[in-house]
Amino acid sequence: MEEKVSNENEKAEQQTEESAVQENHLIAERLAKLDKLRAAGVAYPNDFVQKDRTGDVRRLHGEKSAEELEASPVEVTLAGRVMLKRVMGKASFMTLKDGTGHIQLFLTKTEVSEEVYDFFKKMIDIGDIIGVSGDLFLTKTGELTVRVKTLRLLTKNIRPLPDKFHGLSDPEMRYRQRYVDLIMNEDTRRTFIIRSKAIAETRKFMMEHFFMEVETPMLHPIPGGANAKPFITHHNALDMDMYLRIAPELYLKRLVVGGFERVFELNRSFRNEGVDVRHNPEFTMMEFYAAYKEYHWLMDYTEELLRTVAVNTIGTAKISYQGHEIDLTKPFDRLTAKDAVLKYAPQYTSEQLEDADFMRKELVRLGEPAKEDAGIGALQMAMFEATTEAKLIQPTYIIDYPVEISPLARASDTRKGITERFELFMAGRETANGFSELNDPQDQAARFKAQADLKAKGDDEAMYYDADYVRALEYGLPPTGGCGVGLDRFVMLLTDSASIRDVLLFPHMRPEA
Image 1 (cartoon, helix red, strand yellow):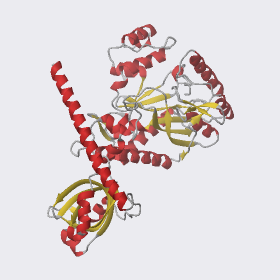
Image 2 (cartoon, rainbow, N blue to C red; image 1 turned 60 degrees about the vertical axis):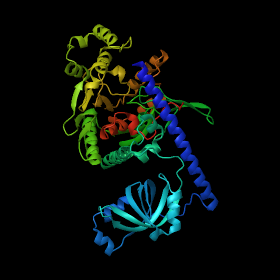
Image 3 (cartoon, rainbow, N blue to C red; image 1 turned 180 degrees about the vertical axis):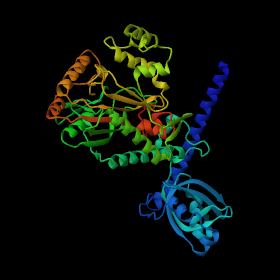
Image 4 (cartoon, rainbow, N blue to C red; image 1 turned 90 degrees about the vertical axis):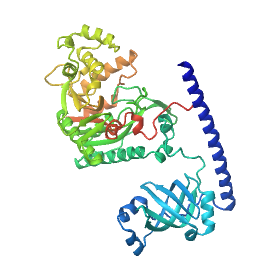
């Protein structure tokens, strides 16, 4: 068995070496062609005018018959990348791809002249970017095609594209060389088209509900808004350390204090933490705040937001994701952490989930030991994370978090130690986090003090004491509800992507070896 594996490894290494040699040979050939282009004049011209795009051409003329196109000729001027080249003596074909689609090109010596045809055969390679003009016609097989009259080479491709049948299949290579991935893989292009539309639909929904879009600082003098480890930098002119924001929350709530009663921000946030299929050091959230609203309204609103964005982006609120149908059409379930464990991990009893000693021992057994000073509420949350979170495939709100792990959320008026907070889980991971905002400045100061004490004891994710934010609250924050939605994770659902890297154009990775 070991010998077989060794032989396979040797074969793979040999194939890699042969591929590298072949690629270097092709690069050398294309560099020689580029030298000829430079000697003849401008190698990279910038005066070609693209008048048409393939998507529009197909939309406007794709249903016309051969007779219609012959009776009323349609001239088009296109630019794009050569994805296929077939030389067939006196007549040849190419496939041209632009940002909207692809179309077939037909060349003959009669139409373009013998000189241009010879240039096409000798100097145009797959991957080159060209500009063409010509008339539309239908081939005998009914394919819409451009009969080329003029052809110009706009950009010489030096590095050959991957094999068209295999594409760029290695995930790491796809992430590192996203530009090649986008050229070769239509599924990748579709993912990022959906992402763009989902963000646009999110913005549209917020605007329609009278939220004002704002921009807040990305460099913070004090990191705040979440329990997370920040990235630290230094501002030379001010001679002070600053932090890339971990969340825009505290600045957005300052705006509500100032009288902007409904605000939102589509924002990039940064956290100096691990990298896995759900986490990237920088990510996109949409955070919003509404005065005179509380967490039940927030849950209803977030539910409608996600449902509407899904329908307007992919045409349905029933999402197929990794073998599951996630149904956004039904009311989302709402459970406490304890009730969720009892429902999805029925091996535990209600009494056990009120027993601190039992939960501590069980968490150690599960490999998720709790902090020494964790109370009942925090232990229940830890049990939920260890036993239940991954099982929440259908949209589920986990509600009523303990005060000790919710330093910015408003405490319940009727239940001691509980905050009016929720997190939304879909496909086994958190997608949104919201709560009725804490607007008592003295309570907030006390919670900041408790967080600062934890930080002094070595908790890197505990919050700093933000005196200016407390001062803002002293001017008066109206009763307010706020929520953050993880757009990267939501786009993962809309595109059936298993990893967050699949929905980030340029995910962070270790340097190449």
